[in-house]
Image 1: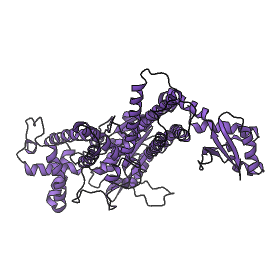
Image 2: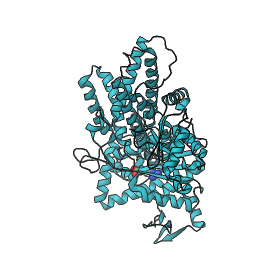
Image 3: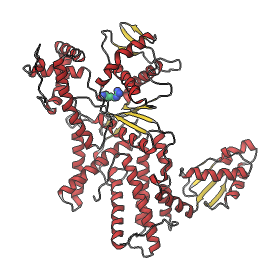
Length: 588
Ligand code: ARG
């Protein structure tokens, strides 16, 4: 089925045409006066000019046409020329029954599925995951799930940072601390240890230390550069060491992402792109795109329409070394070769926007991608503390992701234990699900490009626009359905009947918005639209719930219709939270 607006529009268009007015004027939107009507068409106002007729006369004529239409219970022309529309409750009920019956609630998958690579996560080897990586993981995962729901073939690539100076720094520091390790023996011909002789905890302490030390000590810094160079040029010992660093780091990262319920189809690394660099550079030179500027190899990417300066894209440094740019361009080469995607989406901190603009222009100009390959930068804002500055630990350090998750789980756990009788173990498990919902909803409910304030008290509240509130609503419906099953042993086919009350109609109206909401979230890469919808749906359900005694209802037909209605509500809530990467417990 199509979004409900499409069907309404079709009827309205026919009415316009019956009045000899072009169907293109028959646009329909949600009412901005929900107290007066559900939908509205302002087409008469637009048509008035062309047809040289008073808008109210057109509106009245169209309304007259529509008044016989069983789709509507009320059609009204109001000055200066609006057409107010309200659906008949039988139409609404039938629409819901069709949604309940069909796969994906009748949402039609795209007829032209695209192959899309989403570049998200973007962690760096041997550096602890911090909150900056959180947003990329959460947003990227949600966009992947939304695109899949719509029907695209989506490949998530973690694009691990494993190749630059950080590696050289770690090697240098390890060498200083444990010079006796075989990796550092010149002319060592034997086998290297099978397993790493250090742990992830050591590695994560080493990197920040080495990085700070290098800033103060020139010789050390140079040594790190040399180590990076040697690694990149195939030093046997350093390569063996680097493999160990990778193994340990990736195992730890996988665990971290699993805790976030985020997963990647591809665990590609920056280093995987290296082999594509020489040919790529050669071609850029041959075709005359790349030229030397102050020793460095660059490609001009500025365009006439630029309002701000877009500097050339640097391909190689003056000493011939490769950069972040080179790797990203070569990664595009690799992706085109291995997958020929229709689109690549990058979910990265918005401070890298100009950088990606240069990369995209360079890739297009030099023909690394096809003309119609869509390259999208989805920049996200910063997660701030309550002081409005980037989120830090209490002592002012960078907050590690696992600590953040731990804090939020603790806060939720305390709440659950405060007023509920649950075993310690169950409460811990529930706290994990609810904590993750708090974190993800707190993030995704904001437009991705905006900064937001991480507020643990607000995010973990069971009331208001929060993840826990949604889960609470889901748990409430599950519990009503379980009770109903107890009293109504044999299950019979349930149908949603015409609404008995306003709160029921209001709930139905949110439910039928599902299809257009998904399309908008997909087109705009906007998980926050799913969040807003979930909140509206939860509110509408809770209002209906408070106004009606579902389990106590004696009229069986009515009760059964309500059960069908809340079953559909539950299914849609579950579908939408899964698009955000959230799961609900059975109790909380
Ligand atoms: N590792 C990078 C960072 O921590 C993010 C990588 C983003 N993706 C990319 N293709 N450059 O900043």
